[in-house]
Length: 114
Image (cartoon, rainbow, N blue to C red; front, side, top):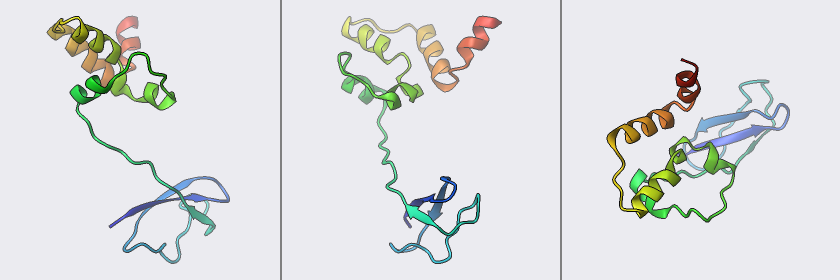
């Protein structure tokens, strides 16, 4: 069962719908304003890769777009890459701190203030 996203032409909000088949469902309305003027969007495609795969494909010289920096899995990726390149195994406390900041980036500020 495909999942389609629709953008409301009136208020701009996005509605997500499970759809049987490939046709737009009848009577589809915006959940925010109730408008029926919705246009199907092309949704993002996600792929899952392990942290090791991300590290292997990381290029420190590449330019990255905003989505790279918004993805918390990329926090510390350069440091991990440099350690691996130098043949140094990251200490357990480094890995623990990195995992903490990846799962809760605001913890850096909380820990600093505390």
